[in-house]
Image (cartoon, rainbow, N blue to C red; front, side, top):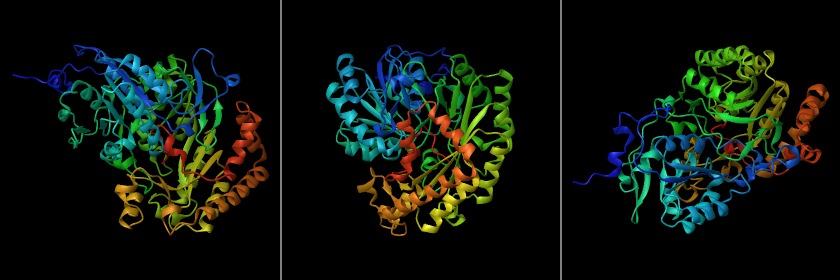
Length: 526
């Protein structure tokens, strides 16, 4: 009788499979595993040594930490594996460097993680170099883009052997355990000879509290708190990291793939689990934390319990989060500020109701005004507004009205990015049905709406209007709020050179790119 190794070590069949206590079930053998976060190089900004970089192999980088691989590493280690983390934003952890290490160490499994479509070409290059260096090592890819395009990726990139669809906490350990019986791994898309096999979908994780806290100590990188702008602006040099306390969003904005990735559901860690992780971060010296939840402001009671815990435990860090303006959690802003919430980002998107309705935002301009007014009233220090322009059916008046609306809100910072469409979003599906995009041909492309949609304004027109809008908005800020504007620039100037500060201010007047919210670690705004 033959018993597959995955049957012996399948965590779902072992009642002793440990939670984050780190006790109980362990594997009978240890495997060396490389977990690599592959970045789009355009979204990694290294802070010069004179402003915080270390000389002991550590680097300071303006980017969000790779929570995906940081979350998976402790789970694999609980099973006895030797896990090594890499983040390609580190100048000594580029694809060539990791391939050379793989050539010498020969890992048993290599996992590639990436967030968005903009990193895919880097994923392909990394996979090719790694396969050449360690041809017998299976390479598995994961992340939002991989989840939405698993079959296409395997057809396109011969160096990638498997794709994990969805959440990896259970999938990756099972994959490692079942290398000789991949058909047993739910959520896996893999090659069987020349055939591509899609195993049945893996259900969403119900109990998020069962896993250990992420590993924030293995990477020799100090991640720097910065604003998510086209030219990142350093906010502080406090020891900084991100947390994810919940997953998913029930809303279905046409430009967002989060509902498709999470089945339109919202799930969360319990307040005790969140506070336990915060205690660990506090003890490790972190003094700035950003919550990358897709929608932190979802439930009043949960926000209340977390904030009361922060206050009671006297945590020394300050923190920020994102949410929708129509959230019930807006009522908890006074308590959030008391718990040292200093930063809040809202996905405002547009200054006209017509455009909000076209984007299926399901919020009103009055709700925007109320939420930001409440945040200002109760003392949130930094309020950021995300806007998109160049949308379907949008006119020149609509774009300029968004800038005028932003001027009335008194935001501390803002971003006006061109709306792009990518696979997995409702807008992509609409464009496929309208014959504007070919799903099979264009799956790996990121299109500005102006490039494919005849109802959107041409790119050169959007760029011209955007420059006009920024001139109007900057003039309003300088003339109507000179002290606030000076204070904000002085805050940036503490950690940025004059050349970088000028570049930051000039960025809105240069060629316009797609929304950089794609780069954020599970943090696309609502």
